Amino acid sequence: MAIVRAGRKAVLLVVDVQVGVMAGAWRPEPVVANVAHVVEQARAQGVPVFWVQHADDEDLITHSPAWQWVPALVPAAGEQRVHKRFNSSFEQTALEKHLADLGATHLVLAGAATNFCIRATAYAALERGYDLTLVADAHTTGDMTGPDGQHVPAEAVVNDLNATMTWLQYPGRRNAAVPTAQLDWATHAAA
Image (cartoon, rainbow, N blue to C red; front, side, top):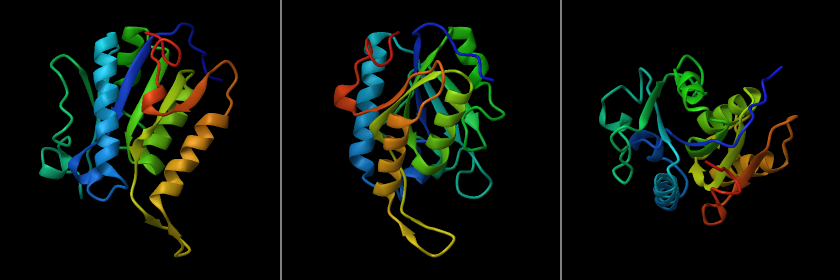
């Protein structure tokens, strides 16, 4: 059973908006622009920004060009960085400790890839008792081929997670999918 976290202390999680991840992503330019806008909003509201960065032994080798953040996004001095090797930003990282140190209760989530790291992080957050706001137009992924050979368009994956985060229910927790233009830090994720 999850501990439902009392309060409305928000944190922005920017997950895996890295050169190698965004190279094959659907609508990368508008998504990166929306992530940048949400980062600016968070900073202006005094909301902590966490930068979650994936590494593996094949495509996102630590310190390689593909592993770097896209040029439009630069973590500011003092903003928390979390390095991960699994889809969920919580697995074998210090994320949960950092969130606890801040008293965070509400996570605002943006980044890539929708069907892997964003989905896994969203569910992990809800299962750990956090409220969650997915920024509906600030996450993306690439097209996929399913195990049966069927083509799965990235847009369908993004729309599916947005719908899921709109309708999904966990006891004692709030979750939503909200477009960048409608994200109101006072309503959706109070600091």
